[in-house]
Image 1 (cartoon, rainbow, N blue to C red):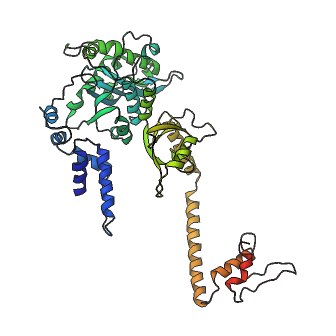
Image 2: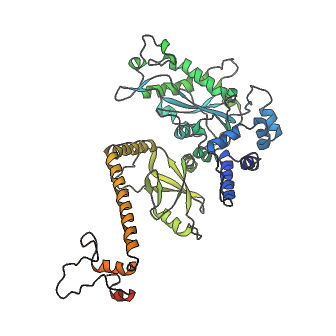
Image 3: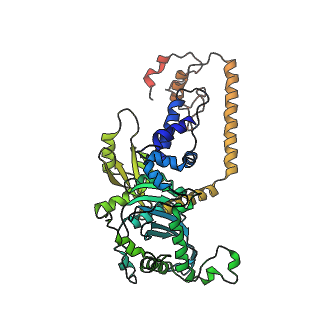
Length: 493
């Protein structure tokens, strides 16, 4: 407990505002350091999730004072049930996921695909939707990554893709504080590392304080009422509401059409309609601020995509970098290993970033040069071309299942037990022989005779067996006394 408190006090509760992951890393390092001096009863470190729970149990007001100062803490907790008001766009941006309650149809096959997941980002100041992402995979780091890219980059492409949209979608730029819930995808080390240069702070909403992220929750409700409820194929949370209605049979909306309708609802309807109290219109509220967004263009845009990759730390070996059960190698990586490997015998660790939508390459951060390099997969077959990490993981899983089906577990168990039995029998037999023959020849001598007599799979199994030889050959008696020098001339035969 003292080490946990030490990590929290000296790392997390400081004005440097280091992350929870950094505090946990410090805690584990201290445990390892102290365990070096303990012979028995070594300290077992708690799991990372347990450490996060300890952080969440801290009094929020005291945490705010330690990390941000009393003035900020007083403003943050000035009254129960009231969130901090934003003073400009992108100051507080809420993010969350929701399953969209409608079954969509495949564009080409005309078959129902099920309900998609929607990840959306909501600006507290203007009440604008600043970004979103739709797919059929469960919420994950990749869902957050795609939605963030949509939020941070400009949306000048929108009208070309959806000509029916009439208005602009001006919302983008650097986020000051990202407000998230306690989903596993938001505790990801990859997300924390990616957001460090892009977001000033991350605020985790506590379960007992839903008002911290109430804007995004209301937004989902508005979307369902304003768009989804009118679509054929809508699903219901309560089965009794279905009656004679079958969402799968009544579903008619294709994926591409839903995406168009969603974007049109966001840009031409929601952004242009007054809020529930008829005080503000999101689009005009956004433009009332003098704040200018940070633009990402050219090299910065590509750098942003790299930073938002999946984080892993790996060593560089002779064969390159092993990652995702693949191997990555390049000439530049080989040169870096030549000149940057530590002289103390330690391995050369590097930070890697993977684009989950394409694993045919990774980006490796070269610490000495302060830059990322692109390293391709060693793949002569073209297997990884355009392959996503999700697809690769599913392919790997199917291969493992197929291998497991082909394996005969009972036969393998019988073979293993037979081998164990034979080894034990040999051990027992040799102990009996050794006790009856205390003066056995030296191993060095007998090894040389084994070489000479070609003991093995194609020859005899004992140096005492008389091999078939030509008349001119000399046969040694293995029972005679042998000196180490007798076979110097056949060493390495």
